[in-house]
Image (cartoon, rainbow, N blue to C red; front, side, top):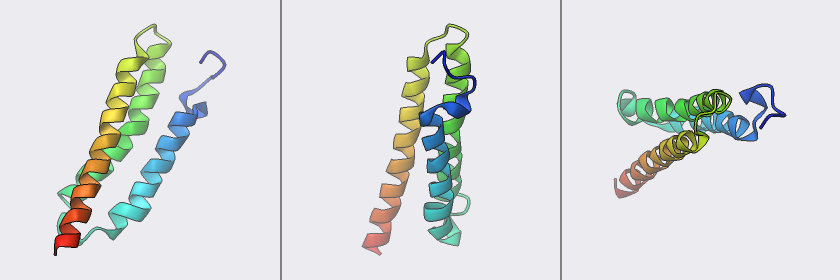
Length: 95
């Protein structure tokens, strides 16, 4: 990791940025208005936090803290996004 001068050079951060854009354009934009303050808000916040946690983990790594904990947090937040979207799709299929 010492070859990187910024977290923005990390492939995982770039993918997290792509995920955030995908969530905004492909998922959130297609949710109904009544989800504006429920699922929509949760999905947007969790998709943003993935990149934020990578950036935070990058900073902590350079201060000799454990990056594995940050990666676990990122993984958990990604699973929350997926879980919320799966629940939404199942509910849409049932109606």
